[in-house]
Image 1 (cartoon, rainbow, N blue to C red):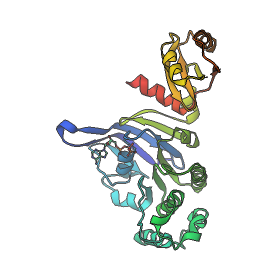
Image 2: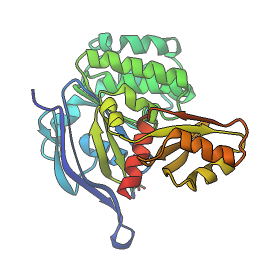
Image 3: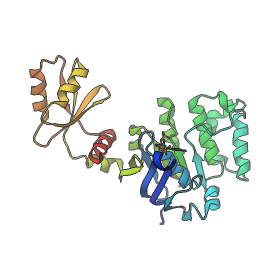
Image 4: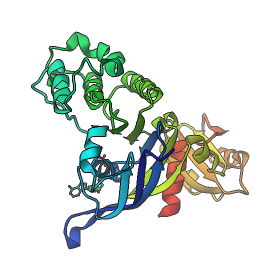
Length: 308
Ligand SMILES: Nc1ncnc2c1ncn2[C@@H]1O[C@H](COP(=O)(O)OP(=O)(O)OP(=O)(O)O)[C@@H](O)[C@H]1O
């Protein structure tokens, strides 16, 4: 089966000579049909530029890309007919109602809501009670559901979702990912970008992107198992001083704040017990030192620091 999306050495720069920003520095990857493929990276990593190229809204300066076998430059019309795109920033018409927005998107693709209702039904029923409300007056979670319905109304084969869960509450985020699973079951290929590392584990495969370069592409499990270093979580009463002391610990390779803990990447010759003894000598109260399994965020931090 051919790949749904192929990107080959894509390059995009903005600005003139002195202020040139290289948003994409030769990005390559392939997405299989029916896959949920995550593009994970912080603000400014190049995710939007990449999505805009793949949805034919922006021309690359270098490289090539195909979507469903169609070239993003030569065959842009064919691609526009078959992809769904949900841009990061709210893309709907704020002054149109929920129903009017959906009708509008159906009309521009020469289809009707009825024709593809089965595809959006599960999502649309959640916003249907508000169908006469203007889109601008919806909550973040509802806007997101409406935008997804609009992106699906012409039954796309490939769906591009640019940071769909940014600014959305935790419950809506969870529901959103459940909806993506159902769309995958319908055979739709999904490319989704997110700055939230915890969402990486919900993708079949992810590409970790930073400064316009892909640092790693694999399944979330394979990325985590390639971490290959001991990691400990540490907490105590004075977290600020604790981080400074951890960074001065000779057996550490890296220490950083991580939620309510500090994470410490150890050199191969060190271990959690050494960390504990070192910190006990410094007189910390309520000290907890525990070996932990890395998650995608630890892997991202590690890859980012090895690259710099
Ligand atoms: N139109 C533009 N003009 C100049 N620079 C731009 C333009 N669009 C993006 N950039 C720059 O290109 C880089 C990549 O931006 P891009 O929007 O693709 O990244 P992103 O990962 O989607 O981040 P964000 O979530 O902040 O949009 C950033 O440094 C950004 O400031």
